[in-house]
Structures are given as C-alpha cells and as structure tokens.
Figure 1: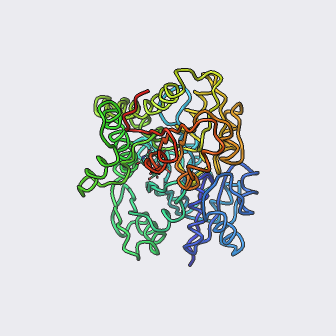
Figure 2: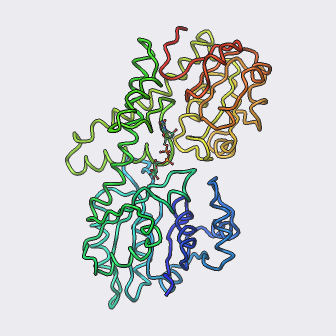
Figure 3: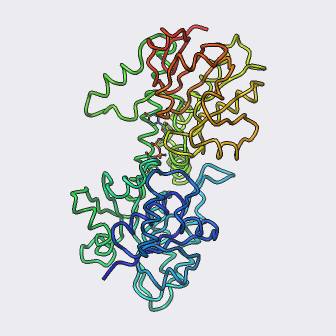
Length: 446
Ligand code: UGA
C-alpha cells in the first residue's frame, strides 16, 4: 500500500520535503495554518526562490499525489507518518530557539491521532527536545492511540533543496527504540527505501545524537568559514594570498577545500541562528565554556562586515556621506532570494546610515530586501545600479556578477573602484581595465 504522509509546516523545508515525498511515489498532505500560502503552493507558486521546486510542486499537485490542508484532523485521518517541518526561529528576547511551533504542531496532531502513527521531527532543535516531546506524547496521546517519535534532521542547502532531499549525503534518524523490527524504524526505512537503494549512508542512532548531528554540522561549517576569515584578517595586515592559502591547506584531505572561501561572512536563516541557539542550549546545561569558541566564530563573522564598510570609506577618502555606492548582490548567497541575516544587506544599510546614496541590484533579492529596508535605491539591472557611482561593491557572487565585463562596467561608473567581497573577479584583468580593486584577505593601503 502506498505510504500516506503528512508534512506539517510548508515553509522552505516543508514545501521541499512534501514535493520530494510525492516524487518518491507517496500520497502527501502538506499542512499549514496560512491559507493564502496553501492556495499559492497548490498552484505551484512559492513565496521564495528555489530552482526546480515549483515544477515539482505542480507535477505532483497535478498527479494527485500532493494536496494541501489547514486541518490537523484531515492530516491525522489520512496519513500515519507525520513530518514536523515548522520553524524554530531565534527568540526576540534571547539567543535561544523559539519552540512554540514545534510543540504546538505536535499537540495539535495528538488531538486527532487515534491509531498507530509515527511523528518524525525534522526541524532544527535544541538537544533534549525529542526526549521532552516523547514525554509530552506519552501524556497527551489519545487513549488507544500508539504514537512513536523519531528525529530525522535535514541538511538541505537553499538553492539545492530538491537535489539535497532526493540525493542526500547521508540519512540520520534517532529513535528511542532502534530495534530493526520496531514500528518507528521499519516505517522510516520504508519512507526512505528509494533513497537508501542508491547506497546513501544511513545512520540510526538515539534521539540526542540525531539532534546534535544537525547543529554540530552547521557549527562546523560556520567555524570553517570563520577560520579562513580570521586568516584573511592576518593577510589583510601582513600581506599574502588568502585563496592560495585556502587551496594549499584544502589539498590536505583531512581539511578539504570546500567552505574555505574568505568573504563577507556567512548569513542566512540557519548558520547564524544555529550557532547562537547551540551556545544558549549548552549554557542552560551548565556547559557554556564548551561552546565558547562559537562566540568567537560569530564575532569574526560580524567583523567581516565592518571591514567592508571601513574599506569602502577609506577608498572614498574617509567620507561616506554624499557618496554614490553601487551594491551588487543583497541575498545571503547566490541562487536564493533570502536576505535573512544577509551580510550584503547589512553592509548596504550601514553605508546608507553613514549618509551614502546606495543603489542595489540583486537578480532575485530586491523584493525581500526592500521589504526589510525600503530606503535603499533598488533597481533592476547592474547597469542602473552602477550608473555614475563612486565605488562598486560586489557582495553576493551571482554568476551574473562573476561574468561582469570590466570595460562595460567601467563605462557606466564615475570611478573605477571596486570591492570584490567574494573574491570572484580576476584581479589582473580588472586592473588592466583601469580598476582599483581589492577584496577579503588582500593587503590594501588606503
Ligand atoms: C546551511 C547548511 O549548509 C545546510 O547543510 C543546512 O541544512 C542549512 O544551513 C540549514 O540548517 O537549514 P544554507 O543556509 O542554505 O545551508 O547555506 P550555505 O550554503 O551553507 O551558506 C551559508 C553561508 O555561508 C552563506 O552566506 C555563504 O555565502 C557563506 N559561505 C559559504 C562563505 O562565506 N564561505 C564559504 O566558503 C562557504
């Protein structure tokens, strides 16, 4: 019999997971409390940019395998595997994660589950959450029902969400009972059988380890980026080539070259929030010293933004007020329209606050950025953004910017001065075209 699955919370993770589960051949119900979002999703319209996902949604709404609802009664009656994919944002009053959506969705499901069911948590949560939810389930499940909880962290990247879900590097699931014959493990293996068949590594573990794998992976990635950015601070002072340094250490297979690109630092809805939530959680556990280095990782990351602002100021004669600045890229990374905790947007806003006239162009991010900070001058092309500007800042490495022609760009600006915040432009070519150009990790005298 076809597996019947519900996905609770149809944000980035949930919408992707629901469409991918339908792609694996299952009957899927996506649940959300936001009726307008559901209507849009049902017609393949996403409130965010993710390559390949709108097509997958439309395909499976049309095939009848995927439908959307706002009713927990509907989800409980028509599915027996329920993925929890709601958000765990940073709380407004602290660094810790807000668990109200996770708790609320589990409670709402429990009100309607009458038979045997598996709840699979995918949201990124503080360690100990699954254990706490297990107790909550024991206390609140309806008499006669039998509800098992598994934790199955998600490692997808924005921009590669469909690929990362259907062909992940590994599958991790934590359960209180890891007996192969147990209901929970049998069910989750059934769900992922088409992926496991391709030889995807499977890690079956306890609940705490599963929760920790996710935050440990993101903390490691954040640390790797700040590690190279700390060395960028050194080469900016003493000289040296940060890319060659990264290449050279990256050849050591124990280190690896990926995530060693010095730049304006990491942003987005995950890495910054997750390293802060992890510090908050270990402090609660009385272990604040263990993750103390993550505070430093965060600080190094934020200093990258200061560096670009002070470099821009220095290159403009120590005066930002009244200067015309072109910002290319405002999202936290390319192939995304996400501006959450975006270093690029933060830098643009700081320059504006210092009195500069800032023109912004991003292939996908203008709308979201304008929603957060409307006062920048958002335009529809790099030509418009660069028109008569005193300096160009490349802050997100969209392919369109990697392909920029120095002569063409040079013909619209007032002054051929550029900060390549992602080190993607070939220095000799740009210098030959008359540009003064620098970037992270470069010694530059102003
Ligand atoms: C990240 C993780 O990579 C995913 O595995 C994880 O599932 C996801 O968070 C999550 O927790 O949901 P994502 O936020 O989509 O994915 O973005 P990344 O591709 O990891 O990039 C994060 C930031 O690091 C970007 O701002 C990027 O520009 C920056 N970065 C990345 C660098 O500055 N240097 C690098 O070498 C690599």
